[in-house]
Length: 227
Image 1 (spheres, rainbow, N blue to C red):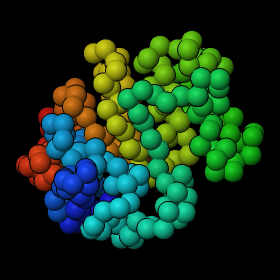
Image 2 (spheres, rainbow, N blue to C red; image 1 turned 180 degrees about the vertical axis):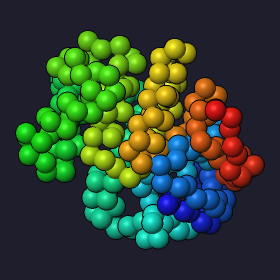
Image 3 (cartoon, helix red, strand yellow; image 1 turned 90 degrees about the vertical axis):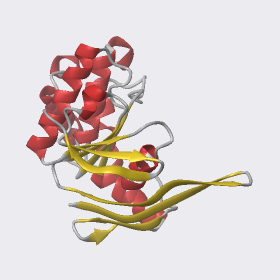
């Protein structure tokens, strides 16, 4: 379980202090798919970055399975590399690498041997329906296929948590539906927690729960969405 309590984050913009988060509390169970929702400037991206160990200069406490998040930058980087996966709006694939090489990249960073890298990458590509495209480079894949490669990359090292920032914003309705269903199915089957910052109601309504933020605070607590 991931829990966070009294999370405060203030940005300094010139002479002005901006409170992005104002004492946010909550918890997310293992294997859940949770949407962080709210208008621009609500604090959802800041909270996503805090929970993803991308923002460390904050006040408050974040625990995973009862243990506090690492605070030292080196420890945090190692933990993030081994225990987190990331999915972005713009896919962030490496253009000179094939699909399977992009997927295997986290395994390379974590020190897996080359045979394991390829085997694990091909296996997860099969799970996302792209086994036959393993040798294709990103510019030979559609946007939806690229996002499925990105999801495979995020899951290949079996992380505890996947952080997804507007993963469907660049996709058409049909492709977005496919990607959302894929994320939800794989997350539940693998026991991986997905935390998704989104403006997209197609995304939010398919998540297990939603945390709605307004002006740096949780507005309606943890809301159930109809599936």
